[in-house]
Image 1: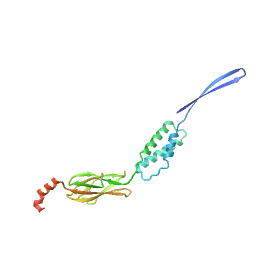
Image 2: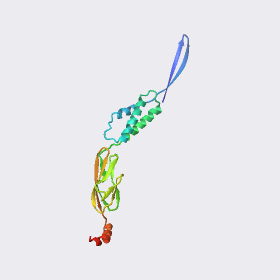
Image 3: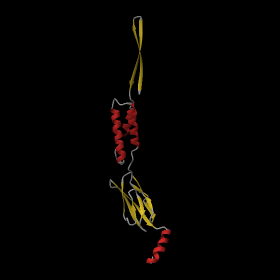
Length: 188
């Protein structure tokens, strides 16, 4: 940003005078908004923010502080630091309570559904009985047994866990086929 100042100088010597016009141009940077944002966010604690969003925020804050303290920083550098810090600040993601959605679910034999985990954390999935239902790395649950109830557990790297109860059953057509083909052989 440029600051233009004009100074008129009049030099009088006896009966004569001479006028001079002096133009002073200086470049300066406006860091007010950047400094305000730094002051607003510099004391935020990691708390329950995800590691990825916290790291991005810390990096943007460090760059912004370096630019704010640099007397030779250009206005473009100041503006870029301001935008990056604001984006990182608004991009902080809270881990929040770790839950599974839904917490209780019913699925039919040989069907697949998906359980979602809230909390923004990496998860390890397990099934209490893989002969009834299995769970994939993305939370997809596949009913592999004819009937039964299992507990799907999602565990974070920090050791927090949440569960979902899954009941596997057969729909009416699966029952009819099962009874027609197998029921009469084994005395269903």
